[in-house]
Image 1: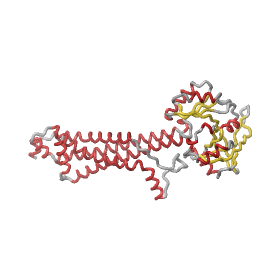
Image 2: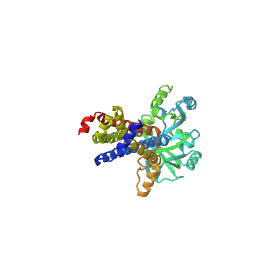
Image 3: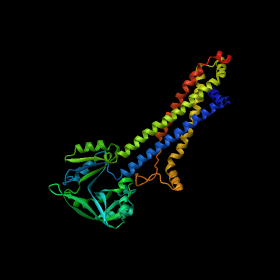
Image 4: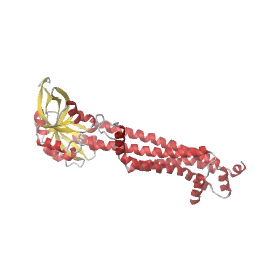
Length: 411
C-alpha cells in the first residue's frame, strides 16, 4: 500500500501537460468541499428551527388536549390529573378553560383566545422565555389579571395596568345569539411567543375563566406535556379513547404541525439537492482521472513491464482520486464545524452591519437564524461524500488496468 501511495502522490505532484486537467481537479475538490460545507450548515439551521419549535412554541402550546363536550367540564379533574401523571409518556398535566372573544380597549377591538390556567400548577420557569419575571409575578398575584400576546399589545397600544374588556359571545337555549357577556380584566404583562401566536393568544386565571364560561367542574379540559412531543398524536388518541368521560381530543400537530412538516420537507429537499451537488463534483474526479490515465499511459506501461500487478495500478488511481475528494471533504467539514455553531451570532452581526432583518418576528415564530450542529449530520455527510468519491475512482482505475504496455510504449 505504501508503494501505491508513493506512486499516487508522485503522479499528482507531477507537472500536468494539460492545464485543463489541473483545473478540473481543483474544481472537483472545491465542489466537494463547498457541498459538504453548505449541506452541514443548512442541516444545522434546520436543527435549530426544530429546537426552537420544541423549546419556544411547544413550551406554550400544549402537546395534547382533552376537553369536555359541554359546560360540565372534566369531572373530578384533580383525581384524573393524578392518574395521568402516572403514565410514563406524560410529563405534566394542567387544567384549563378556554374563552374566545373580542378584546376591547378605547373603542378598538381585537379577536383573542384566552386560556385560563392554574398558576400554582404552571412552573414559572416554563414561561421564562415568553414572559418576563416581573410580569409573571404580577400576573400570579392578581386573580383578575391577564397576560396578552405582544402583537395584541402593540396593535391596541396596551400597557401594563390598563383595564380591558373581553366581549364573550353567549347562546340562548334555542342556539340563538344573545348580547355578549362582558368580562373585565387588568393587563399584567405581555407574552412573547413569536409569529402569529402573539396576535391572538392570552392567559388568565383558571378560576376566573371557568366562572365566566360557566364550567361547573372548574376546568374545561386538561393540557398535556409529553416526554416525546413528536408522538403526541398517537399518545393523545390512546389516552382519549381510554378516558371514561366523553371528551374531544386535539394535539399540537393539528394546530402547529405545519411548521414541523415544513422543516422536515426543507430538510429533505436540502439533503437531496446538495448530495447531488457533491455527486456532480465527484463526477469531475472521473474526468480528471480518465485524462490522467491517458496522460500516464507510458508510465503505467513501464510499471507493468517492471512487474506491477493490476491491483497495484488500480490502487494508485483510486488513491489519487481520493486525495482530491478527502481534501474537499476535510476542508468543507472544517469550515462547517467552525461556522455552523456560530451562525446565529454571525447573522446578527451582518443584520446589524447592513441594517436589514432576515426573519421578522411578526411573521415567523423567531426573529433570528437558529443553528444547532449535530454530530450525526456531520458523520452522515462525510460518509456519503467519501462513498461517492470512492465510486468515482473505480471506472478510471479500471481503465488504467486495461492499458496495454506494448501499444502504450509504441505510441
